[in-house]
Length: 426
Ligand code: FNR
Image 1: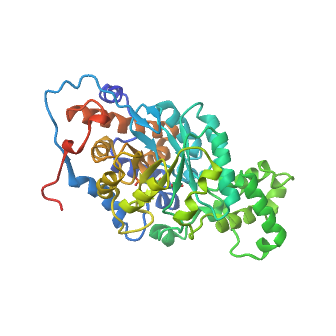
Image 2: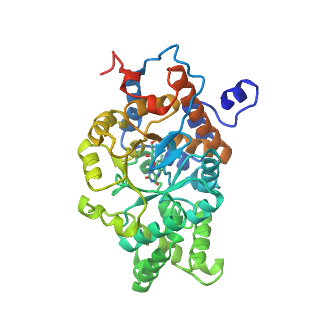
Image 3: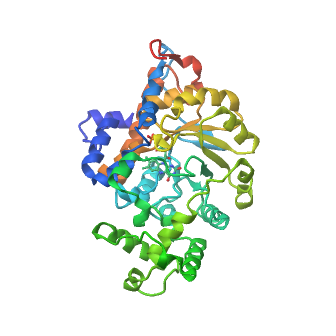
């Protein structure tokens, strides 16, 4: 492949090719707070580690002499042909990794024809990211807000922005017990980071105005501290707030006004709805005609319910081990889910996918596509859009080589026959 040839012809890559190298590079490039937010998991990080280790329970059994000279990596996904079985998982607060944040990720994804799932917790409004993506494929990820009006508004904007599908993330109705962030007393949202989809939203602007009118914001504690570190975030928010018509005056006025603080407090109010149930899910059809996927499904019963509820796909994910520590690793959860879903809807899988060989295993066990998460965040931290692009290209290249070396020519050829359980690992 082109990546391999470039590698051995002496062109120096911008990012390391191993996950360990990427993580090390990101740690060097970032502040302690930012790295902890990206790299950290819930609790003692058992699940974060298990996500990766569980891939080791499977072994590929390569076949020989099968003419693999011509390989086609494309897949069918939601009625469209995609060049590869990779998508970019939604990652919030990418301004922690790089100042170009979601815009850089969007550029890289579009250039590689890899669908990018825009995060609800993005650092840039979806309209700005989409403008930078040209025609690149994008989906929108929703955290089901306590405000239905806000949900409807997000999905209207996603449709207007040409998003092809909606991914509802269901594993974050409460924020997980994130020990690294707790130790550093770090929550980006309270500094106004990762709330650009909100501060650019007209319905959210109304909610903030109401809050200010009620006088709640003035009394509410704790205030967002405008210290050296959060000044940049406050300026960004004020700018967003102005663009969204929250404030009419200049930047100085905006900074002096209580609006940035009110915006953060409103966000904390409406971010999620922990009382959500299966009965509420149908409501999404009032808000959009786009295909809807449920992310964070780990139990076969829930996969079945998602299909029964008319959902168009599921994403087997444990949020990269950031929510329920000791939860089941995704690759271990996949076989039972694939059996239950029985091909009725596509199954995506993320959490622990570190390269192309992992994708071969996931597809063999019934996934249609896999989501990359932390690897591209680290690429972004090290080298911006170029870093993201190299990380994704490397994953695709490794997938292509592993597929061919295992004796297969397309993702559709992969099935349980391609693997065996590791004989020494339970
Ligand atoms: C996430 N993830 C996530 N998921 C989501 O639905 N919306 C979001 O805004 C975010 N934000 C986010 C930020 C960061 C820094 C991380 C690491 C993860 C979860 C993400 O989509 C995906 O499920 C995990 O990243 C998969 O785990 P690995 O493979 O990255 O370890």
